[in-house]
Length: 454
Ligand code: NDP
Image (tube, rainbow, N blue to C red; front, top):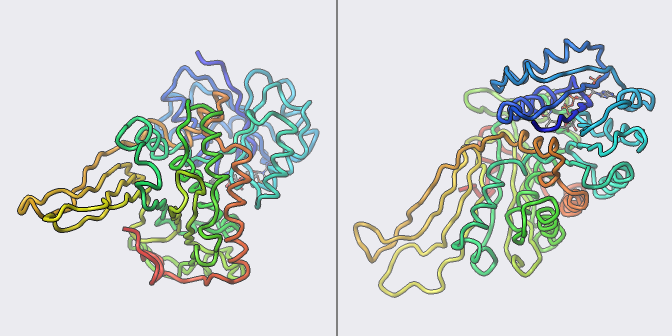
């Protein structure tokens, strides 16, 4: 039996709790029945324990985790988490392993953390922070300062569920367990890398958050830069919180906008009315709650360079957007062509392409092989493997780290600051108007004139 962990969910009646956090917990407890977790839900709602338990049951049922729901104890405490006396009474008497999950808007989390004092926290308490972590490098640094005045860095969990995605973790096996890949994993053999995460989903009522974030901050600043860090890191001696996070952190410290020219290295666009899978979608600017004056992009693309001996000179193109038709979600590693093709062999000599597709997870390798019709002519052939989804969904993978007290798959404080530092020149260039805000029709593959995903 694993020791019980008390999961204090701050913002228990919110969307994240019911849609992602509790279903992930249900999946985890079904997969690992010996794990024991006690939930304390805190929010401003006038709820009873029974009302929280009903929310837990519904969320667990969405993952087929009804059995786990009957095992888990859930208690509700009406709390304003920005008030000193409320926090004291919520946390007093808690012992053992305790995790405080801030499932509240960032401004509320910041206010709550500013109210907390070390004496209110149970010994060893873990603080779990959602994205976005700060709004720029400075605010992320300040948030880190306040957090690490409360608990040591190893007890701070900055959630980025992309680090728990099986595709991100598949990069580790593919690279580090195969002698045919790792020796080629550098600018010597690789020409470019694309990390693309397009969605067909449009705004889906999330204007309050998204209209101030946009695609660059919502996806590239947080998730996709973490994927880049895993792809580009040096080989860690061990997959643990120290070595893994040192290796990914070093990549981010070495990463900057391509050519230090944000205007030439980034693009942005916003969707107009269109149709996705037969459903009519309004223009982004006509979505409820959107202020067109914010000029929020719903599609962002930016190219970065990792300036170290392994990667200097190689473009890493990161792209993410909403309301796109046939959305691509993949990591594409393009190898250089061979230096010389023997005379007598004709046809394509393009470099090999290694592709990790996300959802359904698949890995494929495109190579040049001799054609069956004419062995002196080359043609493309693709080897591919289905990778399966992973036993746990990404949120459950990250949550299991929280409940185990293992922050390996959480973003370290300096890495959170670095990711803001990396995108800051682009945000400034966009604010200055140096990069046009293009349009694309919802359901299309993006604006005309942009390079297509292939
Ligand atoms: P919601 O607004 O849906 O939920 C927040 C909850 O916190 C509400 O129930 C709210 O109650 C409660 N709350 C607000 N202020 C206080 C307070 N002072 N004391 C106690 N409770 C309070 O937000 P989300 O669940 O959508 O988001 C939570 C966090 O998760 C955010 O940081 C968000 O960026 C992040 N996130 C969300 C995702 C999602 O899909 N929802 C995805 C990824 C990250 P009340 O209604 O009374 O204000």
